[in-house]
Image 1 (cartoon, rainbow, N blue to C red):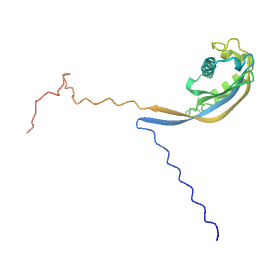
Image 2 (image 1 turned 90 degrees about the vertical axis):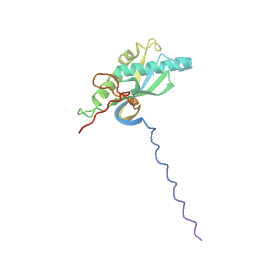
Image 3 (image 1 turned 30 degrees about the vertical axis):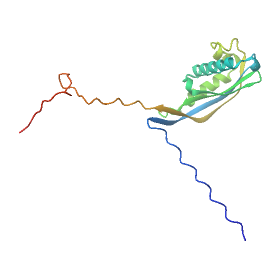
Image 4 (image 1 turned 180 degrees about the vertical axis):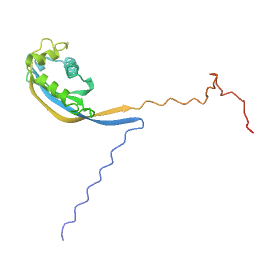
Length: 180
């Protein structure tokens, strides 16, 4: 006899909805990916605390240089080879302008590709970097997106008492009017 037909694939569960009051929005972005090498640093010398500080300083300096919010900068890896930090900087697409975020993203990518001194100047103010010697190993611009999760503002409870024209509460008022 022939083998039995294959079982139908299991249906995947429907995507779960966010809890009430939570709004999830996917925002289109132009993303600049880059790998910056800090040639005068050795990854092996960093404690976990120092590595965390380096990551936070990197994000803050990249956000400042890109003119974007810190939440739009993502460190995707920190590897050895001196210290190589790979990152993504998201520029939110402004649909009201002809080129959206591309001009800002393109300007930022040009800046990080322009040479060691220009890239090093991004990190001068960061305390965990010290004197910096660095270069951009890779950069590219691609379309991307970020997911924004926000909590709706709670609606204040309504007060049963209302104010009359004089500004005093009428919740205990027992006046009535009749019309004929």
